[in-house]
Image (cartoon, rainbow, N blue to C red; front, side):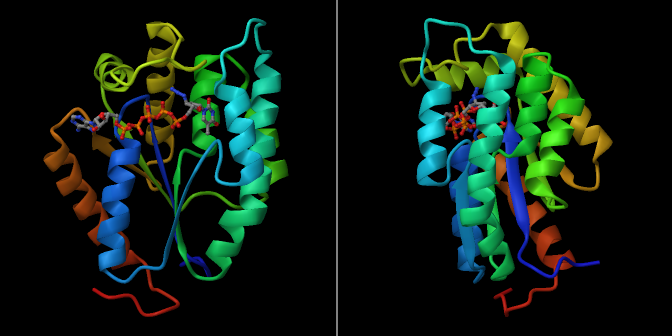
Length: 219
Ligand code: Z5A
């Protein structure tokens, strides 16, 4: 059954997988087809959320308790849902979000070793029934993503993690994609950008084919 609202699409993937680059590409592609679209990101997307993002990414002397990190992420998410995501979806807009709760499973459970049960509890508390309709997982070997991302200069608190951390994150994403194959679209992000974007166009066609808009959308 079609959701009585806009489509909620999330982009996930390891560091430097190309999320920002490809979200900008998809945004231009969808807008050229007449889709009314909101692009946002996590952690962030609101003034409160961007403040939390700054706190989360900043390097600190003291170790951060994984539960504190998780609660901050969900605090930002609660604000993001109330202020941006839910109003846009209810107005029939499509929302593209750079990372969402699957990142909490990948980073906080896979990476930091927290239990999936704690994320599930917060997911239900904060989101109720709301889940993404489609998730595009940009998957690339950890070394490829890190090489791309680390060309940018100073590393943030997550980027300083060891290789094994990012490998666990990748493995968790691939496991999530296997468990939710209806929602997940796997994109091989190790390919040249043109090939990745050709795959995104294919996925777009699938989205148009299976989504009946509430408002007219150009084809
Ligand atoms: N986090 C968390 O722990 N738990 C949560 O619940 C959430 C988040 C929501 C910040 O996220 C951190 O928050 C993140 C996890 C944590 N930390 N880490 N790692 P973020 O999404 O803002 O940060 P990021 O993953 O570090 O994003 P990024 O490094 O900006 O990567 P990206 O957006 O995927 O990549 P990009 O900027 O589009 O591309 C990187 C470079 O590669 C750029 O120069 C591109 O031109 C190039 N590129 C991209 N694709 C290609 C291809 N196909 N070929 C060649 N070059 C390419």
